[in-house]
Amino acid sequence: MNAAPTLRKPLFKRFMAGAALLGAALLAQAATAGPAPAPVEVQRLSVVDAKWRSSFDAFEAADKAQPVQPGGVLFVGSSSIRLWENLEAQFQDQPLLVKRGFGGSQLSDCAAYLDRLVVAYKPRLVVLYAGDNDLNAGRTPQQVFDSYVEFVQGVQRALPDTRIAYLSIKPSPARASLLPQIQQANALIHEYARGRPGLDYIDIYAPMLGADGQPRAELFGADRLHMNAQGYALWHEVIAAHLR
Image (tube, rainbow, N blue to C red; front, side, top):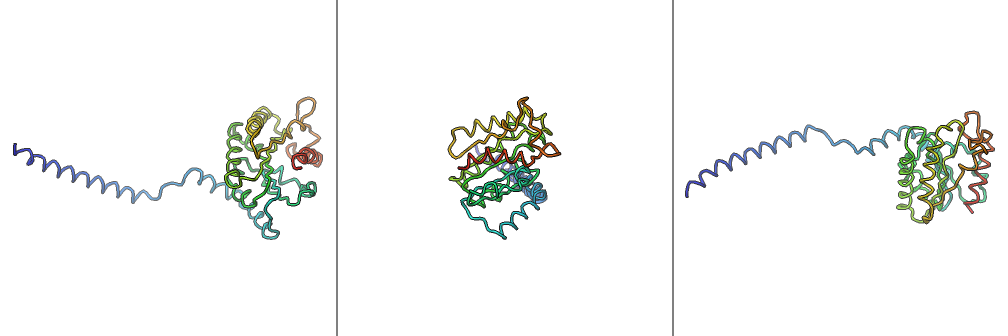
């Protein structure tokens, strides 16, 4: 009966020694491994930030030259917003209007830079056009929809009283092959916005189609992608009814 303790002591000592060696090895490995890799989202933002730095530098310079008062109408999105030269004049009945479009951007970029692009301005209404470039880059309609929901939820968390009006993805002759994907993405977003407080869906897709169901070429410039004055006049007519 007295032999058991003498047998357990060496086993216990060997166990503790092994545990100590294992712990030391793990600590050494952690010390030499370096810092943990950044989350995927942070890595993506650091890459995109370099791409859009000049655009956001221009926004900041404009804000310093003429500070933006909260409570206005903010137009954000891709080149269809950036290239709308007389946007402010066409909506001059709006007391405060700001245009912040950055060409080539995707809806995912608008969601990623929400704080700098939207929240900082504290608008009463955001008019968003993006998604066109996402589909052209190979993203699916579901991914476009997911970015839209991310954008909406981000705005609603930070600015719960701000309304969001989404301009449907336009049909352009240069991207006529994407019409099925455009229709799917628009349908997903339209269904989500339907009946939800603070959300509006503005259909500019249907008015930009001809009787043959194809994009109206007369609304576009030479590149068949970006709109001309006639195209923007149509946009103004459709959008204005939603800003009253």
